[in-house]
Length: 213
Image (cartoon, rainbow, N blue to C red; front, side, top):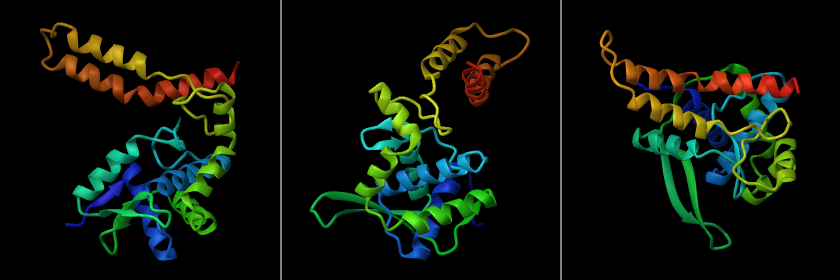
């Protein structure tokens, strides 16, 4: 039975599918930057970002560590092939290509069209050119004003968002150290899962409060 990908995995596969059809080579840097630009365009058009990942300012501009986990999962599933090679300048490079002909994805049609447009317009740029381009986007300009890497990028162009992860880690730790409840087995584990499940809602609520300042 063919696997149908959803969420962040579907966004990555969609980008690789469009790139293959367009004859565009994709390495790790280009994947991240093109997906970031697609998210940025989706927000500019009034839609939710379709990648489902959290963007931060890292060494080469906007990036999400979740992309490496997605890459690993897709490689293990036999959907993506990861090739380690050397580019024209002799620098090690990791390229990603689809290993299946017709991968099945469940993805928002509007975001799929945005990905196709971004790859068509910017896919032939080099990784360095794409990196430089992303540094000129408003979320990255706002992050650079603070001069502090690792901040969460606000795709609407506002100041970087507050980092809720340290507080979430404390909540998880507290939940796991609580004594079990007599009337419901597994309640502590359920509480920890609920904390994770509500993290996105807390992020949205924080964004609303910030917008009201």
